[in-house]
Image (cartoon, rainbow, N blue to C red; front, side, top):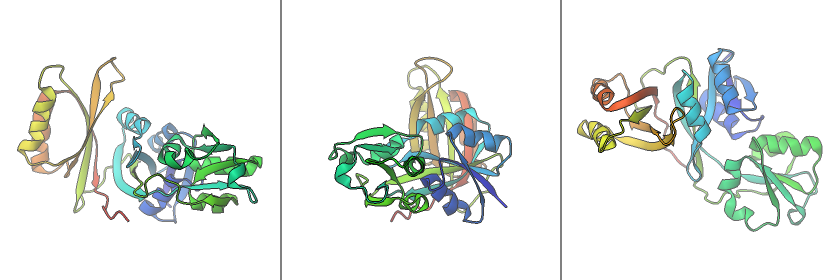
Length: 275
């Protein structure tokens, strides 16, 4: 049986992503930290890990990208999951009585407009479903969690308000990570990270390598380098598979223009059926 690690408790959106990617007939390994997911994959106690990397409203999840840079693993697959948040509490609780709301910082950010209407203290937690589990186990009155409807079902909570996300077009992008590489598919995407030379026009030259070959970049984002203050690395996604001839030529040119490069993976591109 395929074994898959994810960050959070049962009922987390990351578990939903696992099911979408690999089906229900897998062995789930919930982890407390994102780093733990990478560790489990690295030591081969699981076949895959599933991590969130970007939200359409709140932006990139920086910890995930930093870990992708650090660990010698491959992006194996990509998934775009629609995320709908619910406010939930113990049975018989009323919305007007809620004084504390727990959830993951990303979920809190995605529901900011709704939360601004409430007179409640916001308490960041390590996980959406973990917040629901905590309220159930500790029987916390006048408290609520933001999590998925499935988490409410799992932990026996009542949904006070459904669909509280600020924008209904709320999607999270997930990666499956593995020690193995994905096979080329009909549509592929490649992710890499590089550091540009500290000279005028360096980034312009790099982008020109892709433009000259008609390679479509779908992401370009800078993050602080961990090795030297005030220097940055650039995370880049482009359409296509790294093993194709045109991309191999681009990589040879890119090697001349950068001080560091790491291919994070070539993998099947997620379907863009956003409903």
